[in-house]
Structures are given as C-alpha cells and as structure tokens.
Image 1 (cartoon, rainbow, N blue to C red):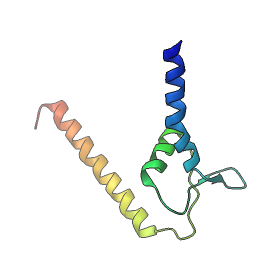
Image 2 (cartoon, one colour):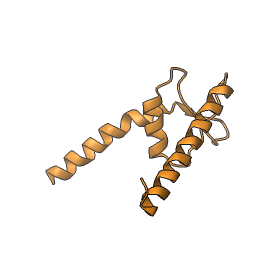
Image 3 (cartoon, rainbow, N blue to C red):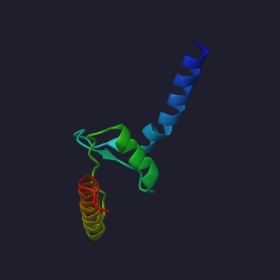
Length: 92
C-alpha cells in the first residue's frame, strides 16, 4: 500500500509542472497556448503526454523557422527510413 501511495505521489509530482506549462485554451477550445517565455522541453513533454493537442499560433510566428524544422524532420525521417531498409536488406 505504501508503494502505491508513493507511486501516485511521484506521478502527480512529475505531471504537475507539465499541466502548468499550458497556460490557457483559446476561447473556442481548439488549441492550447503556451507562455510567452518559451520552455521547449516542458512544451514537448506536455504535447507528448497529451496526444492530438493543437498549439495556437503565436502573435509573431517564425515561418522561416517552422519551414526549417519541417524540412529537417522530413530529411531525418528519410535518412532513418533508408537506414532501416539497408539494415533489413543486410547492407551497411
């Protein structure tokens, strides 16, 4: 019983900062806004623990940065897929 209490306390302690990170939902309830001072680690942790959550666009979106991030993600995915194909075919 003590282990269960400790486990539930530990989980609550770990989740609390994630819950605080998401400041508010937009009036329509379609997305979540994060604080102006970015904390990428906490934001990522929140999004991973809440799959399917949309993030509201910021007041000054960095379109070039978003494009670079998407291109890098696509490039890395292609590299990983090629490595997997090579590993499955026995090539290195």
